[in-house]
Length: 512
Ligand code: MLC
Ligand code: AMP
Image 1: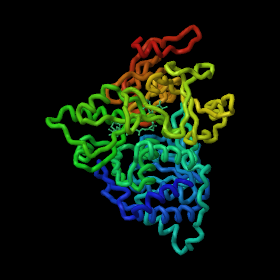
Image 2: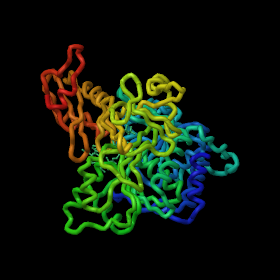
Image 3: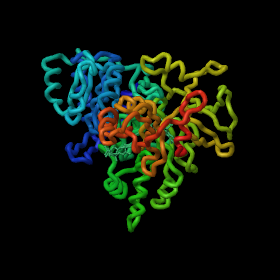
Image 4: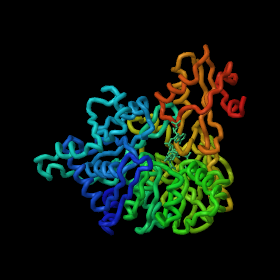
């Protein structure tokens, strides 16, 4: 079994049914509807072209695309060609792109015309000599060129084995540079099959998906489950409050998956309406990727009568824990392990702790990735073996299991990490960038609570001369994805340090 064989089950159930219904909230791209059969047929044509362009088994195919049907076609085509798909966050700028492209060395970078200005900033060395760039907006030209007059049998590729790599997904690293999590077909299949049963997916489900396909939440939890089940995805380029409420109250979706920031914004909108919209045809609202505040959880239920199901996942592991589909969904918890996932909470010495005590969460199961791409040391640091020889992944998440309910609560992170609107920001990366700006001698970035984003990065700066804040903001925007730039700057004489000289960030976080 590989991902394509799983998707074939969904497709063959009703080939003429709509797989993807797409519309662009910005109006730049035309609306589209694609059946399962036509999605498959196009993916095969693209795959043949990829192979003829030289893509070989195990090669990387990077996608730098917004949510659009061509993302799905290119992804399936990459798998059909035996390649590994590398999704890239569309908000990444030159520095972040150049790191990923240099590390993954993709044979193809599939992109779109709207990204040309960003890609134009890349030099030949950023791109690498072996990377060919294709625009999905010029598909006819390269499909014709690649497929002209060549026999179809030359493009046959052996089906992937379950242990072969399907995805290389970059996650921000504690050291500043992002690292690629190598996910096999088997890893992703474990999450998908676990979720299909845990959340009672049905083939007549319709999922409204505003989340980006370049992260696990949109890609694996959303798209993969729908393709496997033969359910329809209403794919959007982003989140629009009004359209979302209209679709959900108009019977246009049975499932809605989102990050807490989206629920916060929905609650704000719903609270201002005179009559509450009727969401009775939506059978499941899910939240994940960041902590859902209990207040938002309860307020959403008060306004809609629907209780959100919160679950917990990671790029490296897919989905791990979930509140129950049938049963009590407890605010502030992520529920119990999904089928086939094992978790244990350990102390600083790695000893397993009883329920009720707080420690780091370790995970194992078929869903857990095997290694970071070309980073054996990072991989070695990220796993420990128990007395039975089982290999456990150190999640870095601090957790406690309730002794009565068995539900887990996440309490924070062992490493510094800011989660803003479901997107990860590692302070170290932002600090390193800030100190390359003239006049900034030292920088410390901390997360501060934010009503909408959950957390927002704030920079404490020690400067040798006056810094032009507007110029610094422009610099940040040119160097970093915009969501990572500090929302506030605080100029200080010195950063608080302990006797060892280590910056004491907790003093900054409390406003020191
Ligand atoms: C956008 N902006 C953000 C931001 N998203 N700022 C901080 N944090 C964010 N997350 C900023 C932009 O930089 C821009 O700033 C302004 O907001 C408007 O941008 P936009 O593109 O119009 O924003 P919007 O469409 O409203 O996006 C909000 C959002 C989006 C919540 C829909 O952030 C989002 O899709 N988040 C989810 C990401 C996700 O899928 N994470 C899952 C990772 S997987 P300016 O100044 O330029 O105007 C994972 C594992 C698991 O974590 O368990 O799922
Ligand atoms: P990423 O590296 O982008 O995949 O983010 C994974 C991290 O998101 C996890 O390690 C958690 O810290 C966090 N996360 C995911 N889901 C939840 C949740 N429901 N509650 C709190 N944190 C979460």
